[in-house]
Every structure is written in structure tokens, then in C-alpha cells.
Length: 107
Image (cartoon, rainbow, N blue to C red; front, side, top):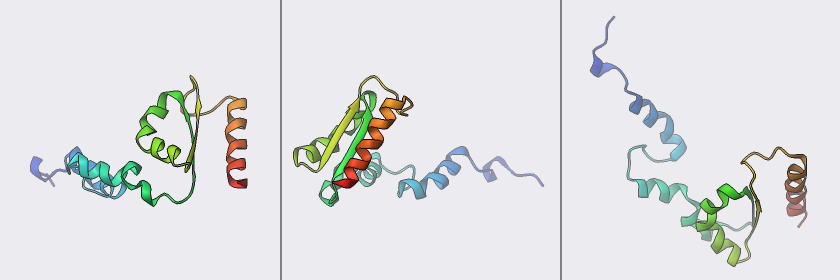
């Protein structure tokens, strides 16, 4: 059985089908709609539990749009690991993050 080129699924079709449930919006919709749904910055009033942010220096700037309002309202704490990768692999950094997690739940 042979398929015409128009019958074959294009890579974009697969991307749309596989990412639609994850992003909760069609893959090729407007970027504003997609990010309005995904970004926590648009729903800060829905955050009722305090938020603990622990991230490397290279990533914390990307979270400031939602972290700053939460920090100013005393609903979040942020700890930045300077010059470290996303994955913590040094024992002292893992220990610091794990102890901070436990302290956070004890609060």
C-alpha cells in the first residue's frame, strides 16, 4: 500500500498532537494565549501556599516575573546557587538544598 505525500503525517502534526495535552492549548495558537495559560505570573493570586525557590544563578532571572511579587508579599523564599548548573551534584549543595527542603516543611 502506498500513501500520497499529502496522506503522510508531517512532523508538525505529530508535534501538535503530542504537545497539545501538555501545553493545554493547540501548539500553533497565539503565543500570548499559550503563555497566559502556562505562566505562573498570570495567576499569582491563586498561590496560597508559600513557595520555596532554589535555583542556579543562570536560571533565577527567568523566574523573577513571578518571584518578585511573591517575595515582596512574603509568600516565597528564593535561594540562588552561584555559578552552578541546573542539576545539583556536589554533596554540599545537595545537602544544603535537602536540609532547606526539610526545614521548609517543618515551618
